[in-house]
Length: 186
Image (cartoon, rainbow, N blue to C red):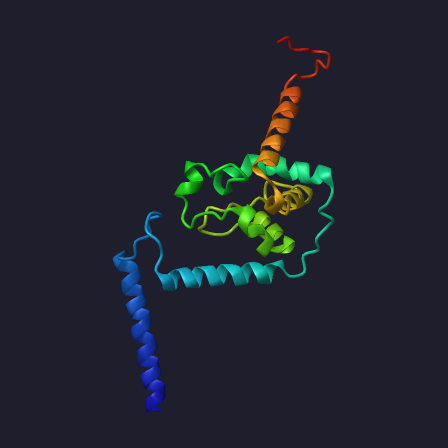
């Protein structure tokens, strides 16, 4: 019985100490101050295990279709490059100011399954700056982003720049409105 009381008192002391620590505000939550090693371990391990667990059972469609990859590029360029960068493109000031720092996906995407990428893209990750795109994107759009992400490790800065250039031409042509016979003089 004495052992049970000792364990109970120890647990109560830990809980009270934790509440005191939380309510004193001593833990610095500034994005300019890294977490302690223990906090970082707990958050990273929890995140990785949660993603792995929640991605189980997701069925991956074919991700090889060029139009799907192009659609994914369009969404990546509009919603992801600012924080994650791209081949030959550094993250913006917003991306550089986030903590934890968003990963350079070209370097990390090979270590993340398509199911996990889909789950992250759809659901986001709390308290990281990674938004959930599920509420704003269709299933097809989410999978197109994953299809593009899987291209990043082999993409050169020149190829990415060419995609951006071809996208600007297409967007410029779309901006011409309903007048299909409108021509520009240079």
